Length: 298
Image (cartoon, rainbow, N blue to C red; front, side, top):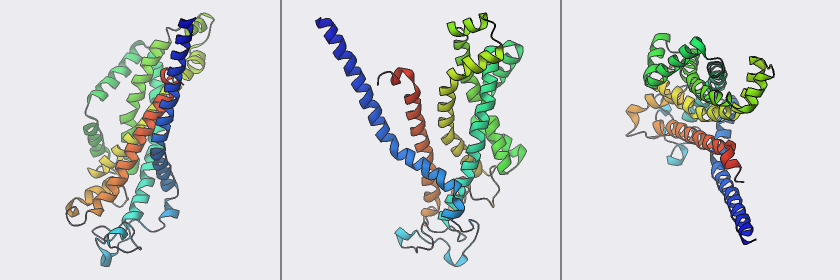
């Protein structure tokens, strides 16, 4: 009787710990969630939030400080070396990042998942060749691979999207293949195959639902990676065109003014850091939430 009571107390303690763990994690992830929502709103409604032209120059207001550092309310975050409004450029830069994320993340997830499921379920020579390509690409330094592609394709937003699609789909392919290789040995999959289920039916009804959580988590974690990658390409001059406002372009143009006009680099740099860090924290929280081992503690 005492043993049963002790076991019940231990189980309840574990559940209580699990509930408090997720409560703490939820409270901690609220600020990053707010930042990501603001990033989303800023990207979608950039023309409403910052209706000005991000490329418009005000030569008489060059390197004007932010309003909280002695500047005017006309330029709340100051201006750059040619008098462009930093606030307007940051908001419109968020739109560029959002466009890239909205295309690259789901596109890479779809293609990478398809390749991973095919290689894991069917295998064969084609599957082996696909995975050897994945291994080779993942072995290359990511930024070097992206810069080489950018140098070949040229600077444009379309080419940035192509580069990041080619770069990121391999992550999904490797993870999904590993999960499918494990799932195909499970009893419910073997039973479906023995009952005459087609390959397409098994992949759609048995495999895909079981790898869906992994896909969602990887997509969430890839969002900040894609944002930073797009900014890095722009910083290195192989990203979006010069006339297009991007966070990476703003940072690279501000390098010569860091000592006497700190806001020119700090403002876009801070925006990039906050969004990237928030995306990582939200992704980590979602991964823990969808992990059955942690979820069962609650």
